[in-house]
Length: 201
Image 1 (spheres, rainbow, N blue to C red):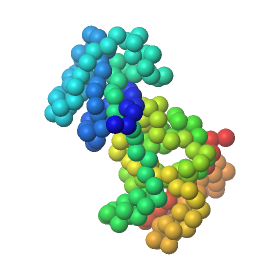
Image 2: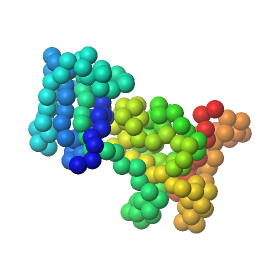
Image 3: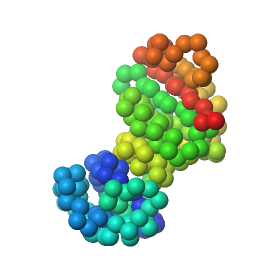
């Protein structure tokens, strides 16, 4: 069996239980935590035959680097998809697909926030280059508040070539820049669209 990773936070663990329950192997709850949000997790775990244990908060603090909210799950490793997944997603999509491309986003918190925003906007996937980019980690999943379990993250070898292929499939490319003359909200994004965002710096 592959080495398990620890995912933490109520939203991230709940999203895994709802969307990919087979990945969740065990859930740890902080001793004494029995509020409605945890009861929802316990019910979902029961429906999916996921075992639950209790641990001391300071023990859980040593397991993860972020604020775990008294909820940590042992899960099978996360999936970052390859370029072939884009064709499959586009073939299955109905209506006008929206893709988000992140070029040079290396901070895990920024990637998590972008995944969360892309999910809220109804994006089909988030695309990143394989090199010099943040990838799925427990911290990214925590910041994404469950969106990392819903929206595919696709890592590609050659971003320029991927964009060219997507344009050939009829998607329009919209670049973002702080000094742009047209605001994003003034742009017509109703057709098949790729929004490109650059580095944090």
